[in-house]
Length: 275
Image (tube, rainbow, N blue to C red; front, side, top):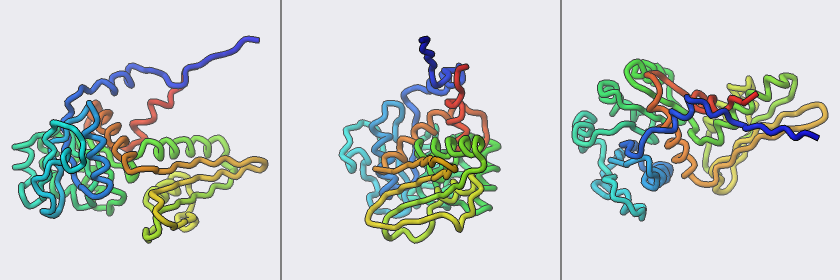
């Protein structure tokens, strides 16, 4: 019996090029909450990035060294500044970067957007929800620079969404349920669950929510076939997963033309199969 072997992912020249970015990508980070701290630790531990600075709203921890604060051995600058310390122009004159990673709030882009546009600095935004006018602003900025916006920037959740869309195309007759679980005090339905529902044409009000304990985040898509079920599930075990996604996005975005991208745009080349 002949056994057929296949390589799952096509190593196209495009993908090869995406992965060759260099080892000194200078990064600025907006936001230093629980997720921002986890993202900073991933950036500091990566050999492909150099964390230049962190901007936060308050003066708390101002001038502290991020590597020292997080207990990460690193010689990267990584100092914390408040938004009131520098204008974005002054900040980027003194401490230029290749990419700004934003884990702050929907208002963060107001601080750095115009200077990023002028200087062609790439932007990776992981803000969970923007109002329509901010999305339009991102589109305007993307005429002059490269921007990626993803409400959930983990690689796993974006792989799950692509896989779910493929399965729906294969079997459009299935019943689809979207279930999300988060920590006890999270009041609203997660933005990620809303995005999943939108991608699969599931009404937002049909999303099932569970709130218990300290769950970081679980998203599940259930496909109900007549004689079988398929469950696609993603669980965030630690917030460092957002850092891994942001790092992936930053590396791949730098090789793109100006424009507004999603994580799906960066992941789709990996879905090309060899015949």
